[in-house]
Each structure stands twice: as C-alpha cells, then as structure tokens.
Image 1 (cartoon, rainbow, N blue to C red):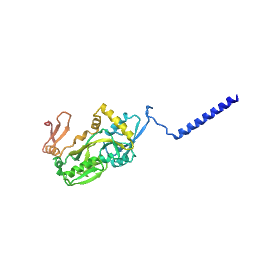
Image 2 (image 1 turned 180 degrees about the vertical axis):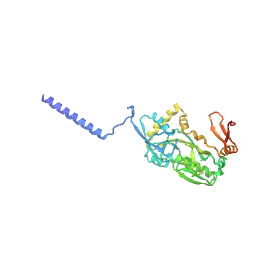
Image 3 (image 1 turned 45 degrees about the vertical axis):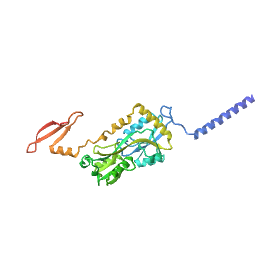
Image 4 (image 1 turned 180 degrees about the horizontal axis):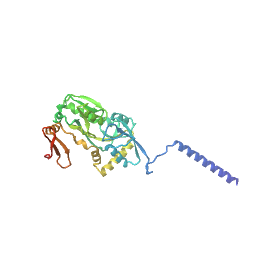
Length: 318
C-alpha cells in the first residue's frame, strides 16, 4: 500500500513538472497565426502604396482602395494563401528607399535596372510593359506637329528617380533639346501642374493619364516587375508561382485590368486648337455623340437683332 502511494506521488510530481515546463515554453514561444481557412499561416506583406497616383493606386490606406495596381495585388493574394497586405504610403523615392532597407516587403510596377538588381529581387516574368511619353495640353498645336525642336526652351515637369524620367531626359538630350526641368511628387500632381499651366509639358508613363493631356512624343518603354528586398526570397518564390498561375488562367489579365482604369491613356478627348477654332468660326456646338454614329452639330442661326431664329441639326461627314 505504501509503495502504491509513493508511486502515485512520483507520477503527480512528474506531471506537474511537465505541465510547468509546457506553460513556460508557451509564454516565450511565438503563437502561430493562421488564415481564415485555418489551413495556412498568415504572412503579413508590407506593400508600398504610391501617393498621388490615381488610376494605378487610388485612395489612402485605411480607407477604400482601388486601381488596377490594387486589383492585381488582390488577385495575386488569391494564389498566395495566407498573405495579408499592410499598405505603407509614400512617394516613389521614399518607398524605394524603404524597400531596399527591408522596411517594406513588396513594390509592384518597378522597372528593372542593373543598379536596382544589386539590392532587390525581381519577379521572373514582368507584370507588363509601360510606355513613356512627353505629354502636353491638347491645344499646343506647336507641339502637335511632331517636331521635337518645338520643345526648345520649354519648362518640363517630371517625377524624380523613376525610369520614365531617365529615359525621357536622355531622349531630349539626344534630340539636342535645352529645357528647364521642374520636379513634382506623384503622377497626378504632374498632370495637375500641366493643366494649371505651371509647366509646358511633362514626362510620364501610360499607367495614368488625364483628359487635359495629350501624348505628343513617344520617348521609350520598358517592362515592369514586382520587386522585394534581397532578404525576402520566400516572397519572391510565392510571387513567381502566383504570376505563373494567373498567366495560365488569363495571359492578358494585367492588360485587361489596366484598361478598366486607364482608358484615357491612348489619347485625349479634349479638342485640339484647330478643332476649337473651327467650332468658333462656324458657331456650332456638339450636342451629342453615340458610339458608332456620326456626331450631331447644333447650328445656331440668328436674326440681325441677335435673337435665335432657327436651330438645325446637321450630320458631320465621317
């Protein structure tokens, strides 16, 4: 009887020691978080969010977000189970510095260069291709003639540290253009400066645009990629796998999403100087235009006293 009592005491003490050890370990070991489906661990991915870049990334983190860059990221996360995005706002230069320092984990839409490849990992396949233009207001008939020398002496806006600026300024130098450069932060701010007359032209890519800007000169293009710090090859493995899956389902996915937000990038809907002059000379006003039909012009005819005498609608020849 005494032996049985001693045995039970030893077993209880051993169990107490084991439970105490487990409690101590649980207090210092990290608790693994899991995704909503409880099958994948959560991996928080800090993503750079460009300010003033409407069309590509719309909105402010913490509020409603949209844009073709945002939609691509959401689709990417579908093929990377467990990913949870944390968006970090900044200018392009600020975010690139943070990416290289490992303070954020991911940047989309980054053009490749040998210098950048020394500090960053790039996706195996590009997200897409962006084209670079010198934009001006649609009424700049002097630039619409296609002669680069018309840019001589003008003030041209640009964003710092981006590939379109490097390519655009090199193109201008090759053409022998001497101009004044003015720096702005963000693509939307750049287009605003053009619309407000602060600059004569801007160097910009086709990821975003404005109805008050027309692409006057094509200066180059490049592919763009996802980029992560050198210290995060695990993320790049996930990205490459996800991009391959997206391409298998729809090879044109990125172009289709981009077109939903960038329909104006192929040109401007604003009237040119010649078109404005014609309307003024003919005293006509466009009243409506349906896709696939000729526009109708409303012609005002007035008596000598200036009162409206008759309104006639004429079809404009195709």
